Length: 330
Image (tube, rainbow, N blue to C red; front, side, top):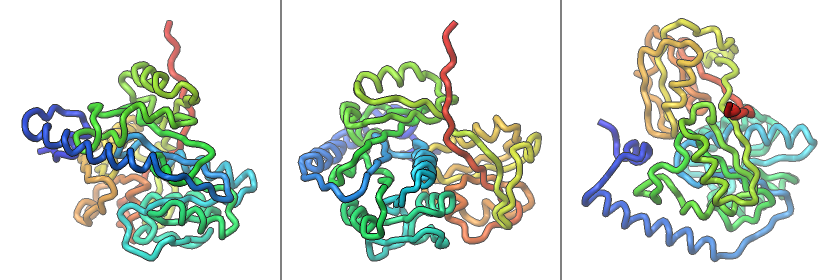
């Protein structure tokens, strides 16, 4: 049976008392955000580029942050990624993780640890107080700060406000949390300076999504992208395998991410015959019993970031953000 969270994410109907209770609770989310928007804004001595969502759950934001971090490092900047470290152990904040240090997902969170592995030249700063975290990055000499999951962290002034939208499930059922997956009303999208649409190749009605974005983001550019697989990483020894390595092979797919269906669909598009699909809650630790055995098991890079040790049969699918061109209408 699907969990309530999954039902809400898929936009299933919830009439009656449950729907009414969830709808009433949405006003708490609305009120909290309204108070934050009326608060003061703080600017720090660095260029701040925010990446965030208007929805809860996986929109493919981390690949976008990794891509921009690589670009800023290549341009010669001292870059920090500022995260609240969702799901990590309690620590004294701000926690500063220096470049080239071995990342620990238990302290940083899985997504920041993945970013640190992919772009080892960056500082990772974990802080629920984004202003304090940004100042800690400036104190390290960073001149560019990438604010991860920052669309609602409005206390920190930003130079760019990038909103990432999952084209497969852009707005859920149109309701505010917890009745739906929206963190704010759609009108809040007008704060975005850029919009990145992810998983466009898997979207069923991209035109409708674009119409909504254009309605609310009159001055924002729109970029169409897809999650392009680049290879498999064998976790026990770090060896990289080509995408063809599992073509025609049987494998189990296990993940704890916000959009598991996209992960499964990508594997099938690579010719992998999935014998098992296991979708856990976002950021959940994968139980050992789902990884052991002789069957080849594939996880996401975010799942892999939470694994200290993995059996020989476990691979992680590596992906990157790639521009995608909508097909032209005849």
